[in-house]
Image (cartoon, rainbow, N blue to C red; front, side):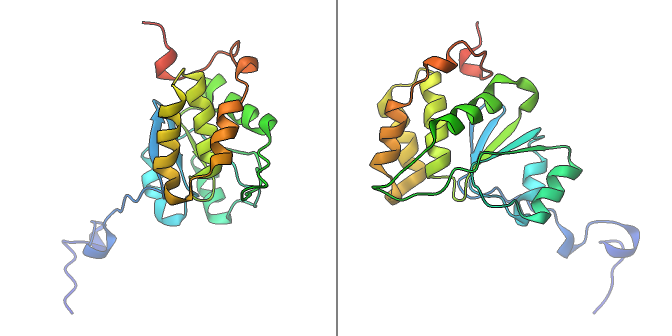
Length: 186
């Protein structure tokens, strides 16, 4: 096999096997300017995440963060906030409102935390609940909030998650200065 150093290798160019790969995490989407959502990122997603210019990551899972991903965050000056919401199945869903409230404050009330990535394991239920509560703050109607939730949860959509979002009390957050594009005065 011929080694063509003009393509890569010796001269530091990008070779055929060295191309940069931008792979977003599972269920990745933009929620608002500077706010993203996804499933748990893995090492194949790191180059993509680097393009977002993240300042923080909000992890809704209780498990310890994988060492390789934690090292990437540290090397890139990205602050990790973990809120440890246990995964649960219907009908025994216990989503702690106080943790959702704190995660919303972390993501939205302090502009220095943005751009921010919010994630859980698959980017469906816990992330869907948090984003649904954010949408309530943005004054979305419930049918639109539930449409978005169902788009990400798919066939695993949970009535209990939707009920949580519907009954989530945003009044304690209304006096908090939230940082998202829909609320900025024009």
